[in-house]
Length: 82
Image (cartoon, rainbow, N blue to C red):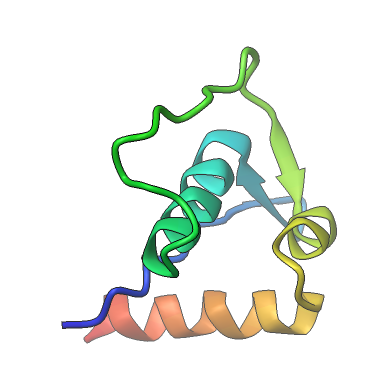
């Protein structure tokens, strides 16, 4: 069993990828827990207002390039198709 968290599902609007802030924060938290940086019992800070984050900003927050976002989204589509 892999402890790698599931990548959040993007939303496509007008040909661009966006992520819900809540999903992005949950993914970042799951990554920290998987790598042992954070304990699972620590409460998650919920965003006050739900917002959409574009893929470029999400890549910056996660610390990798926007092409990696594309690879993760493509991998998620393959997993869903299987």
